[in-house]
Length: 531
Image (tube, rainbow, N blue to C red; front, side, top):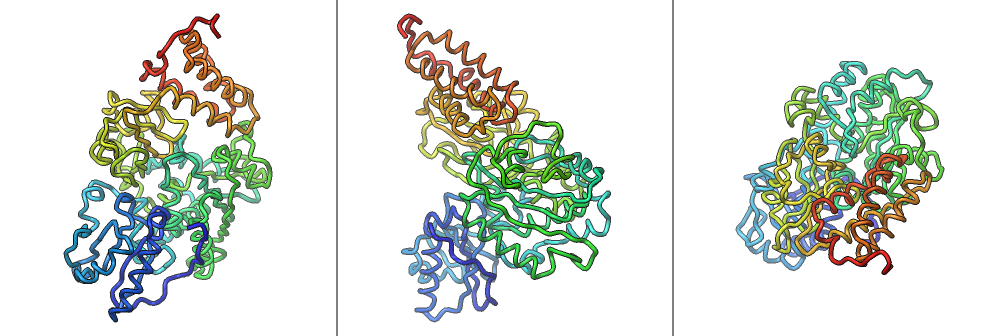
């Protein structure tokens, strides 16, 4: 899996189509070997088949999940290993035959039945590098609609949809777009933040690998809406397979006249490039990302000016998370009201929730805002993989708060989470069982911040290092009460004094661990003089 194979569009299909994911989650558990075994077995039996490499549907505990196209529709089998292939052929799987690994129609699986797939409607279904597949599944209808109604109406539609930034801040996308549209400049830019650095998150990667034309279309619509002719996708060096697929998709889109000049026969011009960062977590912050795109060290900028007015190369710039931009086509295609009808309160539409950590059914679950945290973790996720009690769930990445089971009644909604001093973030949920030491997790948050800080502001640069030292004293049982008070005061300084969210959000996991799991911090008390 270290070497990234060449990516090319699928050949003309012949015979029965078998769909094998090439998503990294599937590759990690043998999907390439399974594809090879299927090819070899079919050749030995003289069976006419075509293997289509897709993205993943997101049921990671069943990967590699292989689907066979039958007269009754696609039938899934999984998790399939290369050694299972001869028995699958013997069981008649090419016609949907019975076998212990037979799952049935994927759409009937309980994990998928409960979902509302809008952003991820095509993932795991289409060949990610087939424009024909993409268009047959509704692709480019959104862009055609945007061209028909024009830029101002497109911005209005995005505003009315209620779409908010899916990268963590939850800022209304339409307001950001209108600010850039109204700005006067000789050049404007669209920048996609695909620097998915949060632990337990993988939604951006799944789109890059499984439905890249969705992102290309969304960014093209954004360019039309605000008057930008150039865009950049900022991805991670840790995503070699995703980047290879994205580069291939960009080449295919250019060759098909879907990027460049006169897109879809209009006067629309939009050029799009992929840029890969060097692995700095802080470059997930929009201004540090822009610095990196400009070829500089990834250091956070002071705001104002906002990137919407003075962003990439000093020009007005839309900086949106990948999931925000990948959702744009469905909003333009099906309408703002259709999208806004999902969700609750000010949290409209759907969120691709990523279940990870010690969870039985890990994977991607897209649903409308409003399910409770307990429903997601216990019913959808199935509780812990260890089968021990859930003790905590970290929501929103390594800088997100820890929520105990007593707060599992919290609706999955921006405002409901904020009321609990928690973050939705990029949609990641990491589950821990009752063996976790929450004091050590608090220390990890400070250590992580110290490691990833860009160093520009004192509260983040110094506060995180001092924070780890204070937690060490607490863990050693030294003057525990006083050091907890000091740690809380330090968190307050970081939260309100840091230049960006890296230092500003680090207090969330620390303070939530102290608040909900105090017993892990009070294991022993030594007087200050004993230090």
